[in-house]
Image 1 (tube, one colour):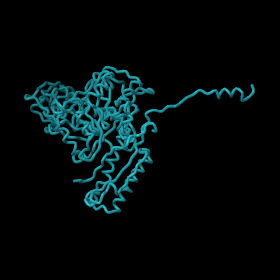
Image 2 (cartoon, one colour):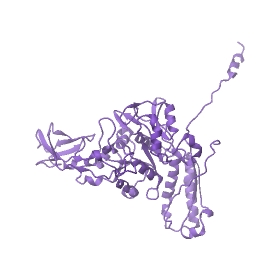
Image 3 (cartoon, helix red, strand yellow):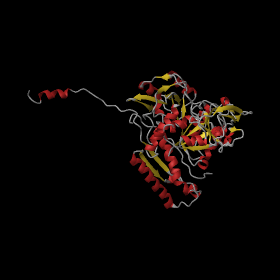
Image 4 (tube, helix red, strand yellow):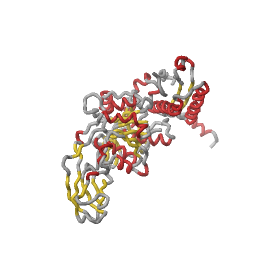
Length: 483
């Protein structure tokens, strides 16, 4: 039976072209064994809201590579660093969902002798020591010494706070193993329907940088990106609409179209990005950079997603493949990628910029057959936004009396919301109605009410052309006065 509140997306008619609050969720792995808690293994499969780099270190651990891209076992570190690594340009919060795969520790403890100088020693562990297992025989952690990971999550800093360690100390610890065979588990995604209960947030965007091509549970069939597509095509907990972002891995631009087609990336709810980007020796997924840009744009627009994150200046050094090899790209080439539904970057007016209002369904050669609500990212985002906002605004009416005046109030109240969106430029048109044709007596008697909402998103300006033509009119100025 029909139960609760919902919003249904309906297809419109094709356009005659001739006439013609918002938090991302990153899914991946983190070095949560770096959290100083003997129950650190319980972190797997859980979601956390992260608001700073220190917050991430305390909740899920953090690792930053010296160069190149983040490995899968540390993949969430990329998102954390992209959002919060620059304190003067941080943007958040973000949601991180930690892969539910189990992490093992070596059966035998490791042992190293560490030199202590000026009360401080450095235990080199490549980020792979379970922090809660670090011990010094005959000494008490928190009384005689402290042990914390360094800023990059690679080494453990031992501090002699009791002045009892002398010039050296033998440190024992348990090292995590099996990271090179880590897989994404289907159980990871079980947490998503409970986000409202567990973290109090519903994401606007899902992404899993570095994991898109990995098979769920390591078995043939469904990849992580397939799962992201399913999440975006469905509704979280039967209510909430969202989108997904994914990265293409081709090293050459000539292979992008084939990779996209082979993987079946053709959904209006999926934004596909290519290539990678580089900065300070590190390689980032363009997905992450695009999401950071989107979040900044949404925040500047009072968390209403009516503006595309395309043509936003980004702080990068250039483009590259996943190995860091430099890729050069002209605006013509960038536009050719947009024409096949791939978002990319463009260097213009002295800056690198995100480039592409397209979702993965877009094909320039087929644009006449694409429904208007699926023509660009703004149309998709605003349709999702209105659906989600309507449900939030009216959830309290479920299981309460809805007399005639209440039905009219629902219409009037939400029309005010739609009018506000139109007045701000977020929509070109918005209306809500309660029609007899959509509400037969039998449905009303059963407490089922249908409200029709029509919205027109404000299209982004994909191109602006100024037609400049020579005219001889100016030559008449020679004769306006006698010389």
